[in-house]
Length: 377
Ligand code: T4K
Image (cartoon, rainbow, N blue to C red; front, side):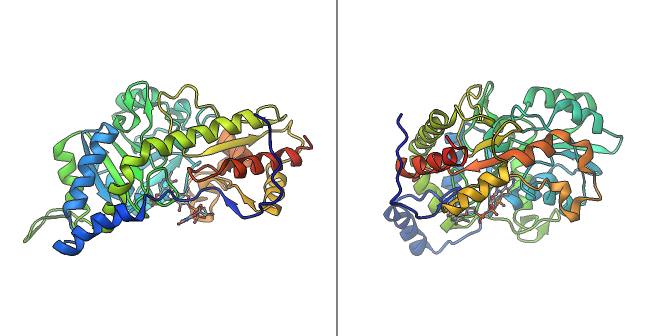
């Protein structure tokens, strides 16, 4: 593919732009809401979206939430965890915040270059008698080392929770990646592959667990007069569900367009020295939620130099995830980044390039042309 220089367009290109279904499709659902006046508390659209998502994702049970962070909070609560939880330093801060809000101690293990996920041997070295669980992230939608992690969990009697905020629709060798571990948590935030403006979900394997999760997200109510657990209000409302229902039928085309963009980036950037591109080839069904490139030592420019250069041309990639969570002052007491060499290296190298269905080929060429210009190529 020949790289086209498009100098006439200077409009901003952000790391992502939310996908939206046709407004008329959302309005059709909203007319029903206006008629029946059930706005929230497990209304008909909420129930319909749960059913349609379970079937689309190929999972047995799913509970919808107001956002992914509340879903994470409730997932950890539902498992009645205590003490220490081994987790990744290389994630959005919400992953650790969900632990500390539950009174749990995050213990940061190192990650690996291959999939940006927790390194099983580093997990093992962090286990103490107080460890109750592993909270791993399928970073950028790349499946974690699910078999090794489960083996460790089984050996030490630990629960496994996957923060699958980036992993909507991803399938690994054993089917949906959301079936791994005890619970998986999704985010449907505006910036995600599938969005309900704000939103999230917990995937679980059995009806009893779903019931517990559903009670926890509704203040712990069992019935009108009984509160059985220290719950919270984390329910998804009917407007969010309407957006989700209108969007779900379009997901195949959304992911296909994301794939095309990823393939074009690979074609247009793969010859640049010191620039490593993400490898989706071993993932059964990737979702291309992010496009993380890495600038290693042999690149002619640093990550920061490339970032400033692109910004001058109105292109705004993001350093997901920099700084590492334990480098935030709030978390520095938990564990020093000195025992996290790979995480620290990756946090200094990664730049997530714009990837979203509405990114035009012209915009993509502009991004690649500007990167090449910064590389003097
Ligand atoms: N676990 C993981 C691993 C996560 O990545 C996240 C969220 C969570 C848990 C928590 O899930 P939620 O509670 O959020 O459901 C964004 C998102 O706010 C956050 O959801 C996401 N991870 C994180 C990786 O990225 P920011 O601070 O980068 O967002 P922001 O506002 O700078 O948006 C990025 C770009 O997207 C903007 O430059 C423009 C574009 N944008 C954004 C929004 C919100 C739009 O065009 N329209 C919009 O409405 O955190």
